[in-house]
Length: 101
Image (cartoon, rainbow, N blue to C red; front, top):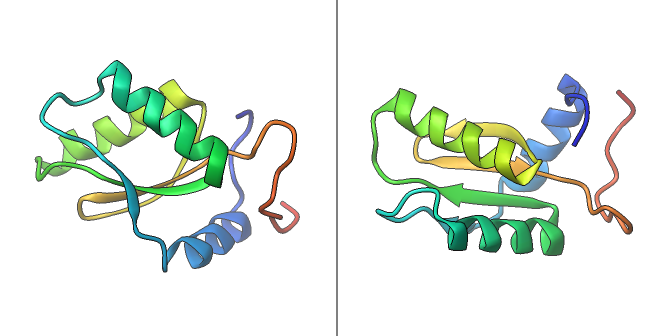
């Protein structure tokens, strides 16, 4: 995904993501190929997903979520505790409409 999200867009996505349950759980294997495939599939199906990370040190959690976002071409919208919110628009049929930047 090119570019970054504006604050109104992030606020909109955080509001939409509030009620979501985590669909991806990072296990002890970390960023495995199977985790990346599942994240890709979930982003394609939902565009906005929550990811639960292991109880790591804060900087390690942040690095893990940033790397997951980078490798899936998504944006890390928010991180609260062990949960991150990732967004990537569907390449052909986006369903989430973002406010103007």
